[in-house]
Amino acid sequence: ASMPVNEQMLSKFTEALLMMENNGKTYELHQKWLAYHENEQLDAVAVARAAAIIVVPLVALLLVILIWSYMLNRQVRKATADLRASEDRYRIIAENDLFPVIVSDRATKKVLFANHCATEFLGFIQGLAGREAESFWAEPETRAAIMARLETGEKVLAEEVRLLSSTGEVKHVLIYCSHILFGETPAVLSVFSDISARKHIESEMELSSRLLEQITFSRDKTEYIKSITRVFQEWSGCEAVGIRLRQGDDFPYFETRGFPGEFVEAERSLCARDM
Image (spheres, rainbow, N blue to C red):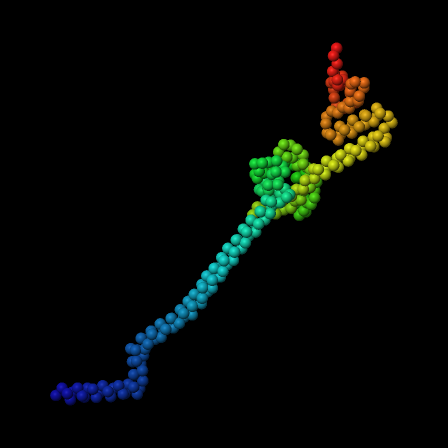
């Protein structure tokens, strides 16, 4: 009895489905119960595609940045190594230069570097680094004037100046100066050429010329001796100068400049006599 009932129910259900399909109800049911899951699957794929569109370029950009950074670091390391090697080469050249070389800080005026020739020339065996640059200039105002010229962009070439050694001896030099960067410190490069021997020869030639001039224009021996006494005092820089001439067995003062009168009187005779 149940079998015919079931068959009737199945027949009616099939008939209902056909009717629903014919009037579009089947599509509405499909959309209501099945389309959600299909759309969900389609949305996940779209999201994955969108994510890929964003992530892939970012990954590629990151790789490019990493490669560029690596190459840049390599170039920086190579440039640093080349610069260090170049500095070492120039330091070796400066250390072994035959001319005195001094580098001083523009701000503090302290010596940053001095080669062996400079320390030997000025007699500072312990070195010049850390000393005041003005301390070995005979005329600090001359250095100040030269530094002022450098500030205008001018290079100082073959300027004649006087330096002082550790013993106080005056050294005549030609100086060559320019602004440089010593590492990262603004500095002054100074190279010296010793002309003390030349200045000594020039001084002797000037003395000879002046003595000949006095011989030419002096009217007698007394005037000539007075003139050359003055010349010798000016040339030597001595405070007192005297000339003795032979008179019999003695050599008394004939002319003096700078000596007190009582000294000249007491020391007039050069030879001691037994009374």
